[in-house]
Structure formats: C-alpha cells, structure tokens
Length: 219
Image 1 (tube, rainbow, N blue to C red):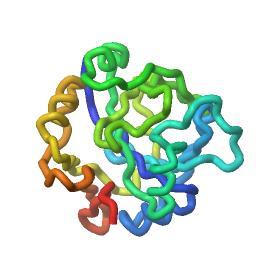
Image 2 (image 1 turned 180 degrees about the vertical axis):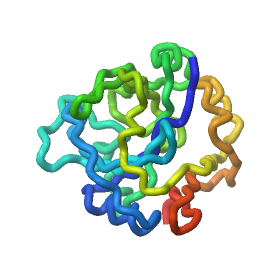
Image 3 (image 1 turned 90 degrees about the horizontal axis):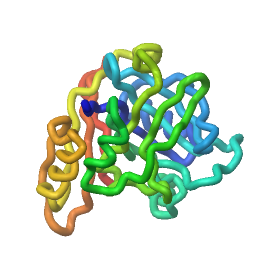
Image 4 (image 1 turned 120 degrees about the vertical axis):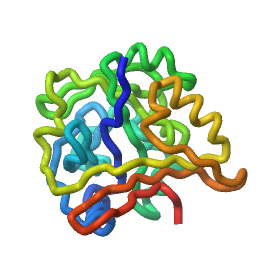
C-alpha cells in the first residue's frame, strides 16, 4: 500500500466566492471541473503536479439534495458559518492503491469507502456517515481512483506546484501517530502550537507570481 498527497480542497459557500479566493491568493483562474451528483457539489480544478491537483468546491445550487450528508462537513453548521465568513483551505486528500487497507489501519474512524463519480471519472472515497470534517481538516480523507492514469494529467496546468504542507496542532504527537497509521506522516510537516490555539494547516504553492500560501487559519 502506498500513500501520497492527491489533492487539496478550497471550499466556499458558493463557487464564485471560492474562485475569487483562489484568484486573490494564488493569482490564477481555475477552469470548471464538473459536478458530483451523489454529493450535491461542483468544482473547478488545476494541476499542482504530475499526480496532484487543487480543487475549489462548493454546494451545487442546481443539483438535487443528496440522500446522505455532503463530504468535508459542508452540511455542518459550524463549517458553513466558517465558510460564510471566508472561503479557504478546508481539507486534503491522500491517494492509495488499497483504500480498504488504509482505512483498516487508520487510528481514527474514517467511515466507509463509497463509490463516487464526476462525469466519466469514478473513485472510492473514505466517507464518514455524518460527512464530518476529519479533525477540523488536518486528518486527510483517502481516495482510490478507478483509472489507469491519474486525472491530474488532464487538468489545466497554470504553472502552480505544491512545495510543501505543514500542520499545526496543540497535540502534535497525537496527530503524527494518526498520520503514521495511514502512511501519511512523512508527507507533511507537523508542528505544535499552544494548548488554547485552534489547529490549522498551510500549503506552500509556487506560482508564476512567486510562492503563495493557502491556510486554514481563521482570521
């Protein structure tokens, strides 16, 4: 089983606000991706590497309400209030070739592997039954693509690349232990913060305009 960073998720209350945040932060305009019928969401996408991408996601106002809670906590009132204040870096996802094994080894419940789709793409995704945001977004979700080639290769290349990720938590040892159980501890830097500080994460992105930073830190 391997574990790699697959994609980063910027979320917003509506897609235009999310795109405006990406434009302001990274200086680029992400082109449309598609819709996720089972989750009631839609997205815009761009490459961040050979098998890595950035996603701007929001609830699809033209889609039917899903039968189950949406992913990334998008139906959670606290997450919705957070995104209503400001769009931002909400979650990250790791890629694996054996999602069942990864979820069994994980030291934190990740729900169950669900089959999801967007257009002709299909994948297995670790989805908690309540759709919750895992550890406030610091613990990644898992994905296993049902395709021979990673879909990032067909996404727009706007000259942006992921340079590194860092997670900040009052209990860094706990966070490292959970990431290690998923094979993801070496994918990011983990730092401690004060006991009363809110955990957050950052991603350094090289862009045509220099190095920019996505952050989940609340202002």
